[in-house]
Image 1 (cartoon, rainbow, N blue to C red):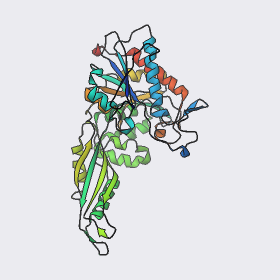
Image 2 (tube, one colour; image 1 turned 120 degrees about the vertical axis):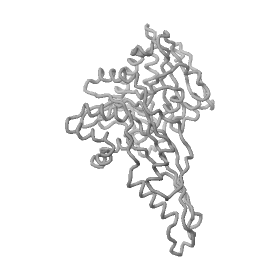
Image 3 (tube, rainbow, N blue to C red; image 1 turned 30 degrees about the vertical axis):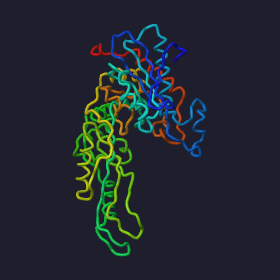
Image 4 (tube, rainbow, N blue to C red; image 1 turned 180 degrees about the horizontal axis):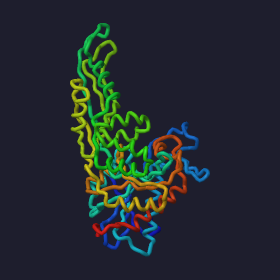
Length: 405
């Protein structure tokens, strides 16, 4: 970037793990546009890999390595597209800001959260951003779909405290905390929390259904009727696994604590739940649903919660981004998507910035999102070039709507 005449700035709480900010000046005809990503990756066990996870070997046109999909390829696209725009004779409509963070995979305290809380002035005037969470090909019924994420669930940690009778382990003690814990775990395994049809999920299912064969379209549409949703998900089985968390708040058991001695029946155990809350819902709504799921078994408290998610996303730039994908893959179908997990978008949303997950990768069947955080993560080099062209086109067309001028 320095060689191209740009002036990158390092900011952050830890000088060993800073964030990087660089700005390409625009002509002032539109608000600044933010591009952002993260350069950290999750660990990798080399014994599970066909090729070394940190060698980035290029084999038959495919790059193998941890972060190939999440999100070294995405960072490469953003940097390359930014440099191309900077080198163009035509100045972009608004400033283009690139932010690269250091720790998205471990909570974002040093990265995006720090940028938002301590350097918000760097993002003055920004209304829209391009980041991770969308654009990779998903193959459904032999058709290529391109999800563009426009929203994500809010994470929280809920602790369930379960109390019961205690005593000596050699005796028959009934109604114990451990037994109640078993009932609660069984309820969480066997029952879903209530159905919520959010605006973004309605758009997702409608967009997908419009491009499916008639019999599949008729099968999908009842999912938008809350009284029928769970029956339909049961009917679809494993095929509905990706859809299920988009229609419900979820609480996944992750940590159990209780008991100090093997010969003493504990009177109290705790269960920590990883909660994921739909847009428009709150962690307190999740707690209320847990109480109704298994009445009287536990007391609940919210230990942690991430920033809240707006009930409805700003879809201003979606038509432009979807149009680029349609032009570059006429057989593909772009559609908006809600992420069941979360990205750094949750922090930038605190500044009123709407993120679009738009790091397109035209992937063949067999290479996709299931490899993220898994062994043998890899990406075709041509897919990265294709995606870079898509991002570059978005920067040239921005804002593509008169309302932003």
